[in-house]
Amino acid sequence: MSKYQENQLFIYNTLNRKKELFQPLNPPHVGLYVCGPTVYGDTHLGHARPAVTFDLLFRYLKHLGYKVRYVRNITDVGHLESDADEGEDKILKKARLEHVEPMEVVQYYLNRYHESMKALNILSPSIEPLASGHIIEQQAMAEEILSKGYAYESNGSVYFDVLKYNRKYHYGKLSGRVLEDLISNAQSPGRTDEKKNSVDFALWKKAGPSHIMRWPSKWGEGFPGWHLECSAMSRKYLGMQFDIHGGGMDLMFPHHECEIAQSVAASGSDAVRYWMHNNMVTINGQKMGKSLGNFVTLEELFTGSHKLLDKSYSPGTIKFFILQAHYGSTLDFSNEALGAAEKGLVRLMGAVKALDRIEPGAAGSFNILEFEKKAYRAMNDDLGSPVLIAHLFDTARFINSALSGKDSVTAADLDKLRSLLRLFVFDILGLEEKGDREMGDLAAKLVDLLLNIRLEVKNNKNFELSDRIRNELTGFGIVVKDKKDGFEWEMKE
RNA sequence: GGUCGCGUGGCCGAGUGGCUAGGCAGAGGUCUGCAAAACCUUCUACGGCGGUUCGAAUCCGCCCGUGACCUCCA
Image (cartoon, rainbow, N blue to C red; front, side, top):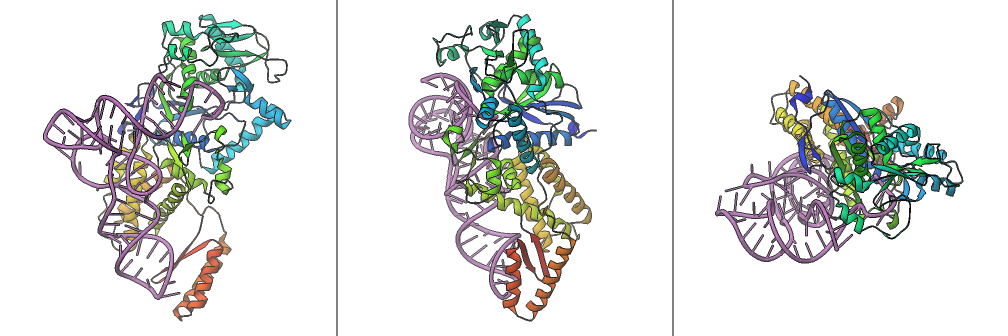
């Protein structure tokens, strides 16, 4: 019996605004599609949130025994500065400003994105398709929508006919938008352009003379509309219908709404069964926006170089901080909150490490089976990582008590606890053991030697010298903790 | 203005009709040459006003505040 048959995973489905039992289309296979970044700038906090959220989902689904195909796209063409099919292509603009090829921009920021993901210990998706590598598929889908009558060609561009679509289907069912409101709220309603209606969106855009990212098509040279890539690529790799589509809440409208319309128009039925959206990140209570100048990149966070930051925060701290909030809530970054997360993480990791130093004994007060149940229950409830972490802290308290001899645990329970903690902390939450900074055998031996000498000095009540040794080591990032009959030390992260 | 959401103690953040969330910070204590860590005890709560109920932070209404999207953003 697989783990997924024992666990009922509930997922909040944005489409129905309620938690639903997750039942994949073709178990044990699960198809997961998540909107990845448009690679025209450095990876920032807003990229970290969905990455961590859906990494957690990916890891948990795999743990439950599902065979997950996780597709996370890279947008490298077609994402214009305005979602209303106006303005320059983001990549193209960056390339122009930096006097480089558009694909140089793409490669550079894609590499940086991958480095950040690795630092956060985010698993690679199964497939990471680029929009520019799927022009044919996007053209084919545009033609399909045209042939079904839900799109029209206009001056070398192809637009989706939202009004016509809405007569038969429901445009706005994901985001709760009302079409009439959208039309009346349109920015410049009287504008003369190629669209029948301002709410129509581009499937294919004609490339102007200076637009160098261009491909031939039956409509002339051009490039694909932003929304089309996700519909075309998810269909290619996950099929006409698949299980989960994820992304940031800000993508709900128009991006995901348009994806739904495209898939339904092309095939007559919905492609996605569960829509999941992570909430936004705020900085000191204020939304993070390019226009507000409070964008914090991951590199700035890791190095502490942003003016809003008091100090640097490790990737592990950032990840732990994100996991301490439910993905559906907004998450506010502040120095105080990050500092708390940092200390909490140290405490948790300390407990995991301390497990190896506990001597088994009589049965103790901690109910490990109960902990296991509660941990799974937390995860099954729409990925309740904050609750899971609270339960993990309960084990930390117990572990520390057992270590100091105030509580005890049998050898069998100790094994069970160890494997459970490793499972939840490392495999599912995807945290990493600290001290990854390898110092080498020799250096470790030297520290041991020095501390043994210090012990002798200390026993001779030469506290001046013993404190000096400890302080100097602290300066090297080595934390010394005196014990009743010896010492412990570790590298500070 | 429209649509959707949120408002929990010093900070972050769970819970969602009666039963301790948790972390960080604060206070007291144990341990210690000191420090660090750890452990024990402990203080600060459910935006406001009404309503439903035996009972509401939890349901309903109104108000206030705030956020997201509608414009660049994950």
